[in-house]
Length: 438
Figure 1 (cartoon, one colour):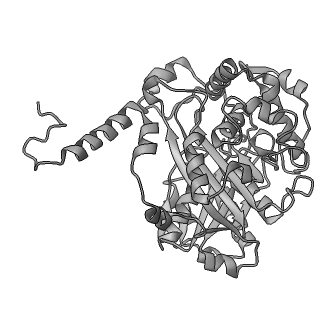
Figure 2 (figure 1 turned 180 degrees about the horizontal axis):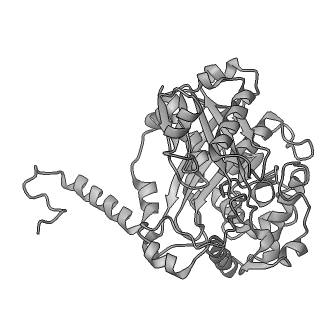
Figure 3 (figure 1 turned 90 degrees about the vertical axis):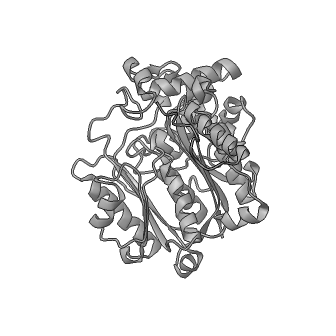
């Protein structure tokens, strides 16, 4: 049998290049994604500047669907309604759109069906899907496409109906029956909460994090959600109420979990010239990065997230530091998701997340880092079980000065949005955006 890796009969190859290619292939097969993401190439300063999205694209439209239960609406209808809302917010028409981006939440062959359904005429489309981080990734990709002249106005949509379809979050989940790890995980019935609970338990073991500290994240989210008329949960909760709510997967309680909601959202990214012609506050992209944190051949650190790699690269491109950020939208499928990403983004040292989030430090007007001032996925909205889109939308609101007055960050000029999609203690995608008000 022929060796599939053999070069027999082929032209001679550069041994150094071949060695590098083999190491990259092996790393991919073994799940050593950290090596891949950090060592897949080195760019000069000139190349980085040329490839950078900094100041080359603007977020000109943003819209969150007000519904949280959509029994009477189709998925396609929700996509169309959020698209229309974002276009109206920007002061644009569907005829202005020449780029479309969506994830697997888009029904029927993804972008092709929705482009046709909404009557768009595009010259660039993208259906990259990395779970809840997809929509932050789409903003990055749209900015790159605009900078390269592939499109001028990019529409990005999300919609879903998990609440009206009866999704409970208790089902066993994998990345699909044919995923390489499915045979080793699916048989044991691992659900979403279990995978996040493993990270929480390990973080507690290694760093002394407590359930009370995690509860402060929910307290902050609920404090903000009380001002959002569309939020699923508007009641302000206490630390005691969180830790005394029913245990879902040790050590996570019911109130450590996000809401299940229908709905969706959309954002529009455009060229600088177009953005400046519109009668909207200017919000520009200054830094973006994305990555995959894989299973690493089984030798995985479940206390770290992909933000450990996407965050620093986004900060480097933006030319700012974590201490400069005035508002942060942080993916919040569970309270532990927030804590670990805050650490990995550099807002505090690894292991100090529990102390960082405690005592109201994430509450607008009270703490050092206001976060998720719409109530986030923990209280407001988690459409299609994906909270990435709403993270972008609330960051745009803050930078425009359009958040609720009770939670608006004064003179907010610099904001971060962080998305995570997949399993916290397993394979997941991470995407980081840094935005600035011009």
